[in-house]
Image (cartoon, rainbow, N blue to C red; front, side, top):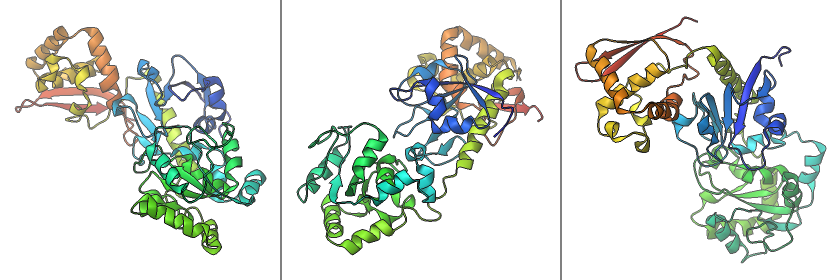
Length: 407
């Protein structure tokens, strides 16, 4: 932790209901890590914006933008520069499933629990199975729960399939309820590769066997011997047969409890707090570098930009003319106040033609929504642009030769 920490101005928007930024930065896992090396200051003119998927306020910002989502959805890639999500790690995204930011994860990862969690894990599991859900839109888990109830009653203390008094809304309320049960139905809202939330993590935490459905690659994350993976079976009826077998065989049941929840080399094992801090530090350094510099551009911009245009954002003048789209990119680069050199008068005339065809407001909106987000510098290439030379090739393509400032 730095003693004289640089100030990083941030804004927070489009998170879930109830998030108060002034409080959120004091307890949210990402901001707690970021605050180790930076003094965080909430600002209407931020160096970097952190946003999620529950609104569109982020579109009003034209700064470095960082997406966080634990949901199975993302905005278009040009709307953010970095992200934390369940997707694989690359130069833009750091894989950070939702359960990692939940309390006690690092104790779970080291299997070294505090007294409170240790007591929950040791609590006698005298009841059969629980189902704790408030989102009524996931038909698979309701279908499964109703089928399992043909064998034994399943405790449903929340909004969906409720059959008993409701429990509290906090995470600890859920854990305290779940501690009584041999099994927990752990179904995601949807099924997608790597999309993994707290649904499987919470049962593991209290020593209840998860009955999991959602991420078809879940066995790459957690030990297959420690939970019931619905994706290993042909249908729900086969899953229920397995549950009945475990429920009636104490030795088999105990073998699930004794199995480590994740194996060495698994995706859970490879999650590193150091990697998270390193990525946050990179984001902060780029954000602070941009304060008094032109926006940063990727080197591989040539022939990479056509996929960033959404049809609803491009008026008919450009929608049917690929050459004009290339000219539009040239204008957009110019709008960032770079020095741009054109190799012939045709390009200069094209720029004038494009300017006459579109309003300044449209150009600005398009730059912010499409180009500004997509052409940001990525971690492996952190140079600043000195100059851009634009050339018209014989085949009609425009090429860009980018000169960079020396470090």
